Amino acid sequence: MAQQVQGVVARGKGEPVRVETIVVPDPGPGEAVVKVQACGVCHTDLHYKQGGISEDYPFLLGHEAAGVVESVGAGVSDVAPGDFVILNWRAVCGACRACLRGRPQYCFDTHNARQKMTLLAGGAELSPALGIGAFAEKTLVAAGQCTKVDPSVAPAVAGLLGCGVMAGVGAAINTGNVGRGDSVAVIGCGGVGDAAIVGSRLAGAARIIAVDIDDRKLQTARSMGATHTVNSRSTDPVEAVRELTGGFGADVVIEAVGHPETYRQAFYARDLAGTVVLVGVPTPEMRLDLPLLDVFGRGGALKSSWYGDCLPSRDFPMLIDLHQQGRIDLGAFVTETIGLGDVEKAFARMHEGDVLRSVVVF
Image 1 (cartoon, rainbow, N blue to C red):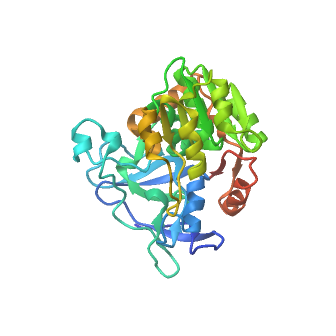
Image 2: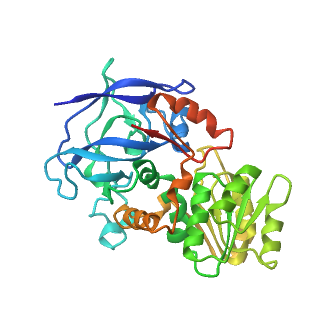
Image 3: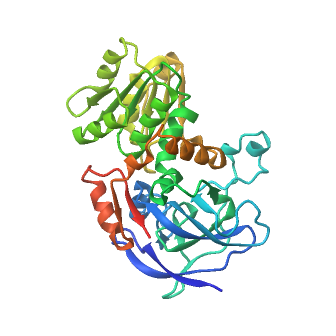
């Protein structure tokens, strides 16, 4: 029987989000209903609200979540009611050319639940953020979007792996292939950038340079493992990174802003054969202008990191284990816990620069 629950909905561009009653259908084949326990407020949700990703309003926001599987549809065998799971937005198909080549993290046919959740008032179909929609007491997802992890970890911590923390850690470890003794520069020290710093430290980088325009964020970056900081509002970041790396530039530069100017900085702050990783999310109108001769002459690699090139079934349990061993502190990313009605205020706090993650706790 379909259920009525409360969820945070964005009805139109520029409109404040509001808590509304939504209808969650019973899971169909390959689907699961998850009782959400915690969900982080990610900048991607703000992009949805502002129309920066699509205009398929109304949106059911929220995607960085953990909870307990309540029910599953026909054919589901990997998860069962009662399982504690982290939700992911890349349920792999297992049959595309990437999956068949043994690289499911690059699956070309990821999928979400086939059925739609709807608004109780008027019956409009909801577009769930990243196919999840977890600013809700319960949500309907594809069963492949559920990754089982150790249930002893706090949901507010576990859920952060569903997007931002995984994106940053994966940008360093999976995409950037940061290795022992490497020098790394991270441009943009919000949640994803700080996670890239954590990932770089975990991988054994010898020098981790945090670049931002906010001294408060740089201070947080140091607490996450940065060995050096650069305020690019007052200092040329390219020259600063080169100076800190013997004049050569960093082995890996991770751009966690998603802006043409910071990408240019990343491009010129790397070593001649270094790697640039773009994990910041640009908006559709942005364009990049680089001399093609410079691209040719510098060698190395220019990469994009989509979801940290992660494979949730492999990476989520591993990072939870590392957290429980004390090797990474996922709790450090949780600035505050809030209620479902506080999401609009949490969006406003993003602009103040003093929050890594606000987390809705049910």
